[in-house]
Length: 251
Image 1: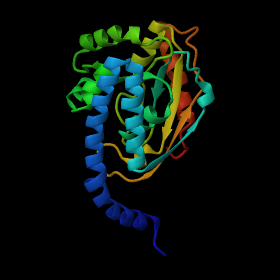
Image 2 (image 1 turned 45 degrees about the horizontal axis):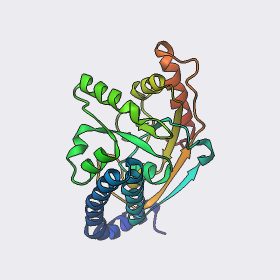
Image 3 (image 1 turned 180 degrees about the horizontal axis):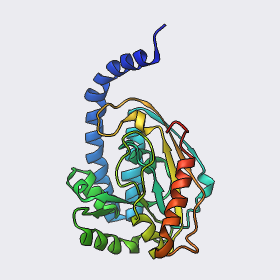
Image 4 (image 1 turned 135 degrees about the vertical axis):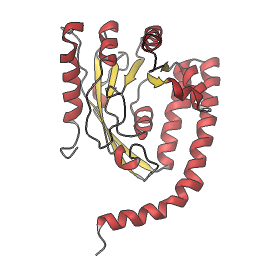
């Protein structure tokens, strides 16, 4: 009887022609195309429509082409008229497809400045209002976040990966303060979400893409009432504990 690891290696070998000859070109072309769509719709209509068509549709189509299957739990925890500071664990580049394609609300990403250079993606993200920060310059990063605060209103949220980088093994890393500081400044609740499964679809720092399944768990919002800069660690711990509770025990 063929073992699971052997079967996975066989499937990996069989998947490579599809990955490089079909999916990779599709990803590149769709990113350019939907980036232009986002620019046009954001200019002619509004950034929310540009983000929905140029971002959410782009994410879903690329997920389907991989293919991956995504299930969602906890949609009832979202009030679409409420803005949130969304915090999520970060296992893989595929977290972007899962969040953009399946979260179901308008939000702004906080992105590395370097992503501006990606054809299609950079200009599209800029026009729909995503927030680019220069991590090498603390003052410029703070200025970018402060300038972006006026966008987080009327049901538009902002999303952070508070670990700051992708987890190499799927475990949950320590959180940085940026997301929680913004929540206090804007007086917005924290919306924790847990992503499961993407580390097996595209492991961090590799091109070992494989089809698979992912799960998005949307937890109950965490009010910021009673939290200040002095006890912000308590808010961070509450969000981290909530996200961790959604992860399988073997993570």
